[in-house]
Length: 364
Ligand code: UDP
Image (cartoon, rainbow, N blue to C red; front, side, top):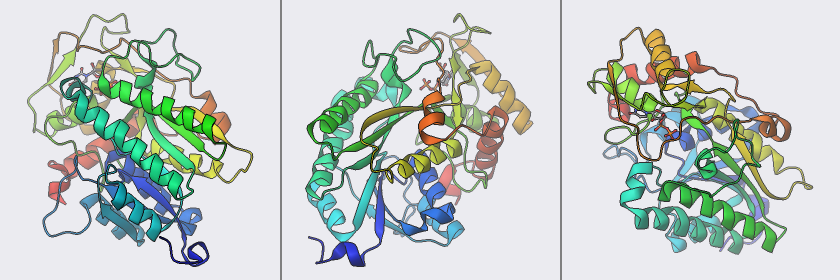
C-alpha cells in the first residue's frame, strides 16, 4: 500500500507500459523533452519481449539514452503486465495519475499463427492492468490503438465514425478492437473512467537526433524498417507485396506518420485530462491525412539516403488492403494536434538512425 499521505509527498507520475518499445520510448522522450511535463515522474513497465537486452545494464538502451539526453530520471521495472502482484506494488510505490498503455504484441502475421499468445498478452494483460488501475483509483488512460480496427475501408479517408471490428484479418487487429470495446464498457460502467484511444496509422522514422529509433527483432515486417535495412546492406532486396492494386502505381497506399509527431499526439492527449468536463471514451485518429504508395516511399527513401533500394514485385500479402489514410480532423479539434513532419523528414530520420546504428541498439 501507499504510505500515509502518499499523494502529498510523492510527485505525480505517468505510468508508461511498453515504454522501452518503439512508440513508447519516443513518447517518453517527447514527455521528458518538454519543460511543462517536469511536474510528472515517468514510470516505465516493460517485459522487454521485443527489445535487445544490453548485458549488465539495469535499464534498456533506449531509456538509458533518453536519460542521458534529457538529464532526467526514468523509473524502470522489468515486468509483464499480466503480473498483477508486481503491478500492484508499482502502483503502491508511485503516485500514478494516468497510464499510457503501449505494451502489446504487434506482429500481424505472427498473430495469425499464435492467436492465444496474442489474446493472452494483449487482452488478458490489458484487463489485468485495468483491474489494478481501478483498485488504486487511477481512471485516466491513453491507449495505443490502431487503424487496423477499421478493417477493409468502406470509404476514404477513414474518420472515427467508420465502423470498427468488421472483417478484421488478424488476431492482432481483433485484439485492438476487443480492447476498445472493453474500454467502452468500462466507461459505461463508471463515469470516473476517461479513456483516449489513439488509432495510429503507420508510424515510421526515428527521433531527429538519430539516437533512438525502431529496432525490430528478426526480419522486419513493416515497410520502412525493411527499406532501411536494404539501404544499409543488411537485407538484399525489398519484396513489394502486390503491384496490381487500384492505386496510383498499383502498390499499396498507407498514411505514414513520423514517430515524433505520433509521440507529440500522446503528450497532447494527456493534457486533456486536466479538463474536469472531459470524460468517457474517445477514439482519435493519429495520421497525416495523406497516403503514399510503396513505390513513392521507396523513391523518397532513395532521395533521403542517396542509396538505391533494390526491389522486386511479388504477390499481394494476405490481409492487406489497397489503401488507407486518415481523416485527422478530430485530432486537430480535440487535441490541437496535427502532423508537422512530411515523408522526406520520415525518410531522413529513419536513415539517420539506421545508418548510425546498422544493427539497432546493439550498436549503442
Ligand atoms: N510492404 C511491402 N513489402 C514489405 C512490407 C510491406 O510491399 O516487406 C507493403 C505492404 O503490403 C503495405 C505497405 O507496404 O502496402 C505497408 O505495410 P506495413 O507492413 O508497413 O504496414 P501495414 O499497413 O500493413 O500495417
